[in-house]
Length: 528
Image 1 (cartoon, rainbow, N blue to C red):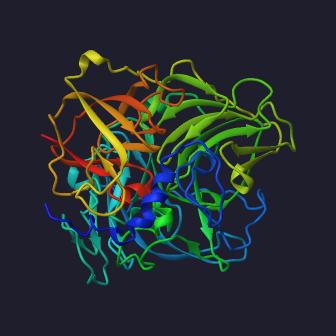
Image 2 (image 1 turned 180 degrees about the vertical axis):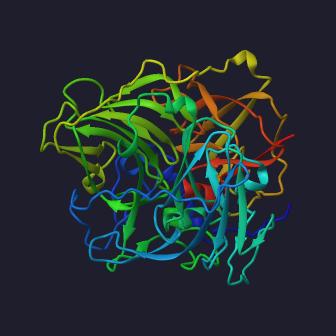
Image 3 (image 1 turned 120 degrees about the vertical axis):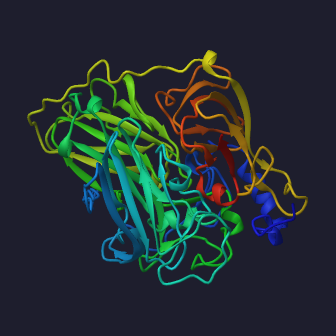
């Protein structure tokens, strides 16, 4: 195969990129500087800090917004039909400044879709942005034509004269069908355009999609206004409020990729929750269910409460990426990588009226050491409980697996095609949409042994999986339940097990550090 446009990505700067990427591979837990310093693993994350030039607000001065729930356009025929327009919008993210965003319905985060297990959800996406898009419902079990494969693009309604990478291309709009053949879980939808996922998600193309079922609704967990989705991400802002991102083409219509020094990941210095910087939320002294999502491009967080509760764990985990745990699991703190979700209950009853509780980031420094604040208003009635059993969870066993696949996520010392700089690869190869990839028989159960040489959050489309082992031992403290993303540090290994039930066709798996993904760290698998 000849060298394609993706193979030549940043080849001209190979002499500069190679040492920078070599620095990115050294560790995933060291401390690093900000501004225009070198590549580092700043605050537990592989990437480079991008510093705002805007005046950032003091933490705890902006109220927490909650994304609105989108109403279906119709509910006929046993399905809920939604229409979402992707379009530019203007938002006051930083007080007194206006930021241009690309959003679902022109807002960031996009509106929340709420579905029910077994009831089909159909979403028509209309593209009024100036560039192509693709929509991936992250964590959903979908047919391949509705999964947001990165070359299955929706072109702008106003027309597109740029190049196309192939794939199933729609003009102006596309209908995505989701059977919701899966249990209750916190999913999210986001852009998945090949080469440009990082900057397009960074500009605002992300939203929650929450699934409910009878089993979950029978539990006495907090609900209603005490069931709160929290989308956590980091951004950097220019002096007029504009979102800063080091893309090679500012209009995202030309050359893909980021400036060389950001190839290991883009880290912002402003922490947003539901699109607001370091917000505060008023809470009664009762239990709340918090649906934590790390929607950052590259930043990892180590979340803790400050001050911690006087009794009990700070967080009681009730769900993971793919749904409810079998039983509650307590954590004093939670490490969460890009794309992971932790469904937790926090009990504020041990705090008094007027207390302020910080959701801290123990990987952070300076402004990134804080995420948001909870202000306790006082006692209130609370009929919620955390039951000892949450779901009928069945662990998968090694004996159910037919074979073991070995998958290596690595920064290669050279371009696999013989020229140019270091590249992010899977099994020594950069992403090729035409590659056959791994073939998996439909309905089969497999173990994938995933290894890394730099920190990578590894995401599989289509399936939920369980973590069998980590570095030859037991799973880690944050590996419980059904996962679709596993967080691996430098030179780590995890064994995951999944049953590949679904419609035959082509799917992808990739690193969810979005700069790594855009730099070709993605591969195909086919259900046959």
